[in-house]
Length: 326
Image (cartoon, rainbow, N blue to C red; front, side, top):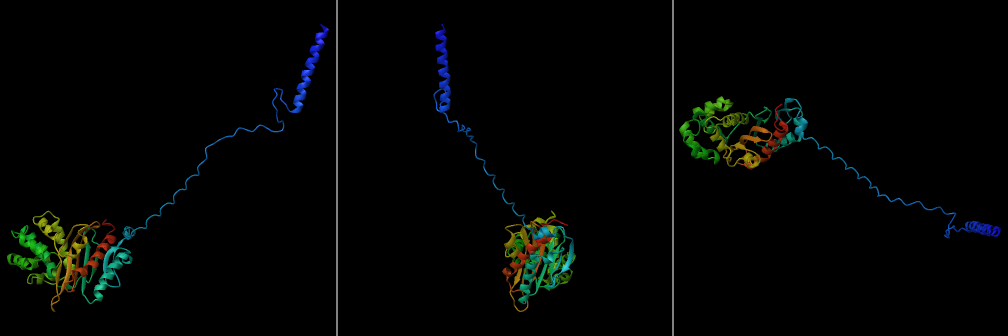
């Protein structure tokens, strides 16, 4: 019994000693080598890459205000430029590019030796542009619109002469104009002119088929044509229908693709006594309706009016700021 205890003790002692030796040699008790000096690596963490935030776009600069917007809140004043062009318009209008263009086109005609009369009136606000608007010039066929307006107002229409009036206005037929005069006479026309702002032309209008008239008086008569043509009165729509289809008008050729234009041009080649190139009417523009009259003593050159009429239309838009009354 004692011998067995001794043997077991010896064996246990040997096992303990062997384990200690193995640890000293760097061998784990399970027989695997170990590196006591190297720490086990930490597990790798995998994360999604963080995208750089996109740069914010640069804000677009605010658009420059238009000349019309700049003038929108300005007080309306009457003023005359150094070149003699008068306006009733927002303060500062004379300094705009739009006015400078009108001024330049008038000067271009004047510098060629022509007499020029201009009148433009906005029908909502009364704002206006005028130059030499009191000088009476030869109207040529521009006067036919006024005579036909008198006929339609006094007779409730063309009075059974619709074809005659249409040719008189749309095609500017002199023969048909004379036929209307034969039916309605001249005294009534003189009275009509005097009643609608053409007092200087009224007397001649009671005698002569083509009485001299100023741009200012011609524009005043077109204000009455606008009133009558939009009134719903008998004959008004008939007259307006003819005037909306007139041939040869520079204003119509320029603007009818954009808006309705009632107009009647007049022209006459220089014969040593009479000479004219004119256009007058109503433009129903996006800035509001306005009447205009441009009269010159150019020799039958309707295309020569186009630059000035174009400049006047652009100036009206700026002057009226989209047509809003003030």
